[in-house]
Image (cartoon, rainbow over all chains, first blue to last red; front, side, top):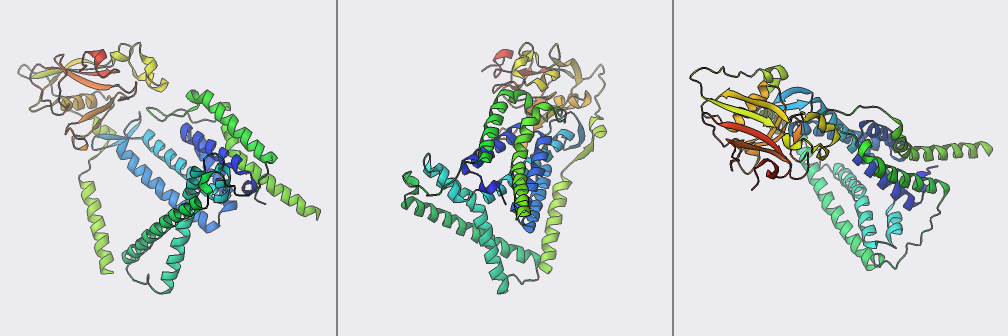
Length: 287
Length: 176
């Protein structure tokens, strides 16, 4: 029983929006790491094991790239470790780069969760009455990466079967795969454009067409909305003291009481999922 | 396979060239800067670094930066240094900050359109740290030269000052 997937799209969109904004603005390393781990736990339920492993490879590659590039561009910080071309490489910059990578990893996992829990129809349903064009555009954006992946996988499998990638040279195979990736990108882009035009022709962007989908606003949805709104208000009141800073010296990395609302916001989807599992377990035991 | 080998060799060569032009130094090596002793026949210039514009305007800074503004605003007191042949204002600043272990970050002359080094921050006070019009400016003998810091060649007896401004120079006498 996957509860988060069954939540009302308005509640989910509001929750994801507040979570992404708060994480990006706070930049607190402990909260970022905590969110990353929680999203990983939730991701285990929505993503296949191999898919999760490939996402982790991607995140690790991005982390290395971020750390290497950041040390060449940022030289602020009170703890120099060594100097490259007379510019300091500091401990603070390395911590900042790692925190940025964790932020990226958490956001990437949140996006995967959005893709898994918010189908295009839900987004269009939410935005039809307010901003239909934006709804269609957002649905296209969210579906773009999964469509691209699926197309790439399908073409790779087909080409593999006919021996297109059988070259003994590693770099030649890479070049051919790159060619397929590029073709998949064009194809997905074209498909998105065509789909947007088709939806526009069918009246989705007029605001007068509904998707005829019924969603019930349940207790968990109410909790999601109340929590998201409360944390947004809490952040707007306390942002000057709660925002973490890395330069010139790192702010103390400790958990304090003021961070509790953020921790609860991050933990909420996990709680909803667990509630679903517990409910499912007891349903089974009564049968 | 031969093609693979050639590509790997080309990548290794590229990385080697990239790193051969990169100078790595430990903190101790970097700070071991020799400042020439002043003798009777030495040509000298003076250097001062100050952020007096921030005194009584500390609210412009983020709280974590306020500790880096000295109470009198003087980061490096006026002091004489030996002038070496062809020294620019930037050369002297770099030598002095290294010697006195004052943090300084700059953008290299090849990294901007002005073909001159640009001082981004001294003593953790950076451009835009105190608002959109804040940053470092330099003056020689009280005048604010209209050339980049690494293009101004110093001469004997010059008095060089680096000043932090919060109003594009208007608060330190260097406005346009």
